[in-house]
Length: 181
Image (cartoon, rainbow, N blue to C red; front, side, top):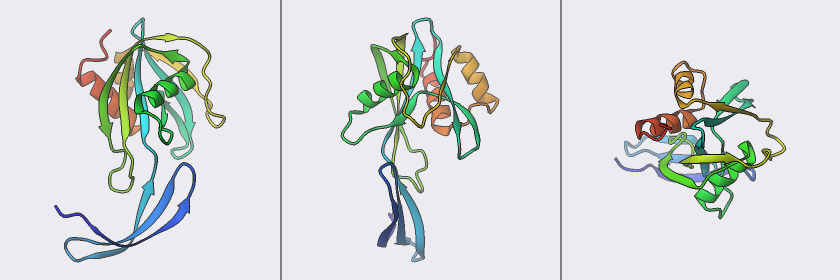
């Protein structure tokens, strides 16, 4: 497959956390798309975290896009120049108050490869300990949940966990046998 040729680009919106770009592209078939929108996001890090007792650490928060609360893994954006593992550790500490020594990188996946430029990097943290109260960003209002991994997988199967990246992370970790206590 040949890549699309960008004939012209312009930014419609530039913010510290995302940019919206409009590309005028020429497809390999010769068809032109004068308004193809691309969202430039920073990289993300998500953590499948298991405590020393084998519980899965999750957070619940309101998500305005879907206008409901969402049960999710500790996760967030990677700051510019920040190491991926350092970002995962920071997000776990900030959102849940946990730290771990045993970390495994599962890999990366593209949240929306047709229109987004970023990847989500998935880690598994095992043997985590609660070290201090969470310290989320001022826009985050989180409720901490500790679940048996099988309970989280049941909630995923029943459609109660809706965040696509977090579903992928849980299923990926389960497939690799990393959710077992």
